[in-house]
Length: 163
Image (cartoon, rainbow, N blue to C red; front, side):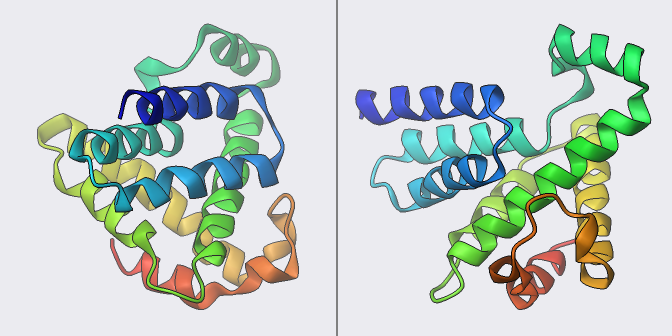
């Protein structure tokens, strides 16, 4: 159990240090697969980690990101970051195309246990991701690292229905 928790923490750290979409997708897929772990604390940690990676609160932004936003402009950086995040989510969904996806369960758990102000912020970030996914249905060329295997949008359309 302790080893799996340390691995989740290492994966979270490594996610933040790489810009490679395939590696980020692999990391998130492994975190989603922890939904099948027999230990509830490992499941909870993986869900919390995915929430931090995909739906970070603005107060938890690292100082380096805030500095980049100030120099490059927040719109440019935020749009790129959002497109990268959507590409990762698409990749994770595509990796479960042949079987029941635990990604849906993860998203439900992230969304279900928030209350008050946290819920409002989380729903706003979730809606932004869903809108970008829908835009990707129309023009996937904007999505970084887009590969034909990620064009399996039927799983994503099902996930968007979680709004």
